[in-house]
Amino acid sequence: MEHYWNLYAELPTLMQIFWGCALISTVIMVIQFILSLCGMGDVDMDVDMSAGDGLDAATGMDLFSIKNVVIFFVGFGWAGISFREIIPQDGLLILAALACGCFFVASFIMIFKQLMKFEGNGAVNMSEAVGKKAEVYLRIPAKRNGKGKVQVSLNGVAREYDAVTNDDEMIPSGQTVDIIGSTGGGALLVTARLS
Image (cartoon, rainbow, N blue to C red; front, side, top):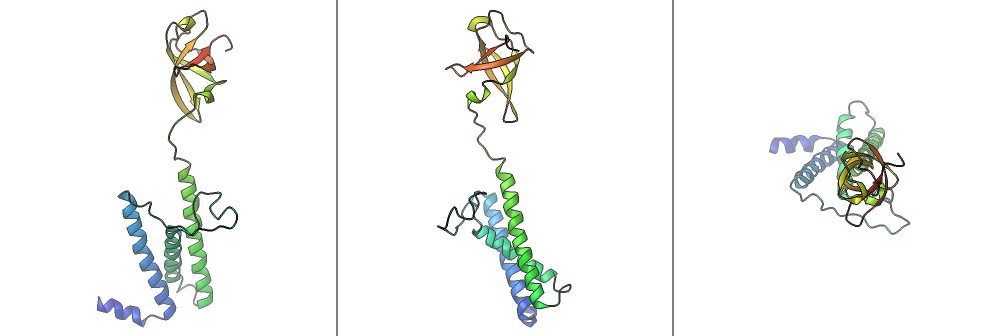
């Protein structure tokens, strides 16, 4: 271990900063990742800003959270180390490392926003089905003499619901029907007359 410490001490100051940022932030990021796998990764301290709507108004994610700061320093540190041979001027190297750190944070926020689109509880209000077409899955008895089933696409997801009809004739399986309402018992009211 002393050997590595001596190697670190011999580095120029700027490279010591890059290595320190890269190693420390990478260790913290790995710890955060492991904690999130164990269900303890939601612990995050955010910077509270009272100006306007805040920096996270559109994304629901804070720009200055611990995770984002760690991600910035991961990008900053490793970019500084990686670009040292390509960019020998210290000022340009720092700018490139800063740009990479910002790119890492922006990429993380964009990925997080895309993943959040998949989050949901799956609950659908049955009134959203009114006015849509559905396909009869199980025949529906005439004049509400029993329940059948229909399949309808809501929010891009095919769902199956109980259905009743006021029509004078039974509606067979496979027929397309119009959803005209819902009953208090959790079934959809459908008709074949409009289809």
